[in-house]
Amino acid sequence: MRTIYLANGMMVALLLLPPFCLAQDPKNLINKSQIPAEADSVEKFVPRGWKIEERLAGDLNGDSVPDYALKMVEDQPAKDSNDMATERRRALVILLQKTGGGLSRAAVADRLLQCTRCGGAFYGGMESPANVQIQKGVIVVDQDHGSRDLTNTSYKFRYDVAGGQFMLIGFDYADADRATANVISESTNYLTGVRIITRGKGGRDIKSRTAIAVKQTSIEQVDSEKFEEAAAKRLGLY
Image 1: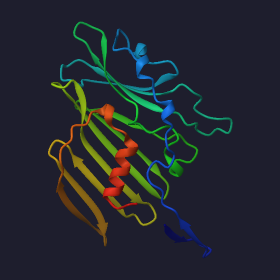
Image 2: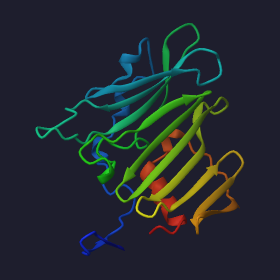
Image 3: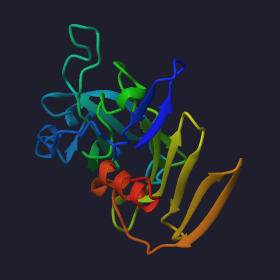
Image 4: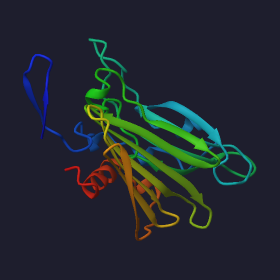
């Protein structure tokens, strides 16, 4: 719990909640069984009750042919009668171009992207973003949420040709207190097995480096809520 003082001298206690206090309802996960293994168009990979929120193209498996990352969202009204954003689940579907034409499903990440109302008080009645990019063949997912304490995360995934899966190669987590400007963060490289923790203290950053056991994690196994909870506990945030 933190205490702050308003301009009129009133004292207000803030209860700090763990990440994702707007928990996502697992019953609304995308139905993977409705997503075909192969199809001849992007649109045929969209299951009933969902739609494409954003389509990104880029070579993801090193064959110099454009592949696709589809950020999907539940096909429900984006706003309610009060012009407030509604809560809709998201999912990330990865498609690879097949030699000779057609597309194949490479991954369906149903617990990676935050929902449209999981941004917390920081976004108020606005829709919470889940930013997806393709950078030099790497899928990068950035998202944030919170109120006074703002949590920011970044995930990086790269295609493993031998295993035929998109594997987690990097995870960054940062907690920023917007009232004090203090930031505590960690950056984990799953290729080198190194985690760097940074804590702001007395106007300067103190960094520590630790070796971690490298665990192979595919994009389909990543649950962003659990990843954030684990990082917050490691950093002693709650």
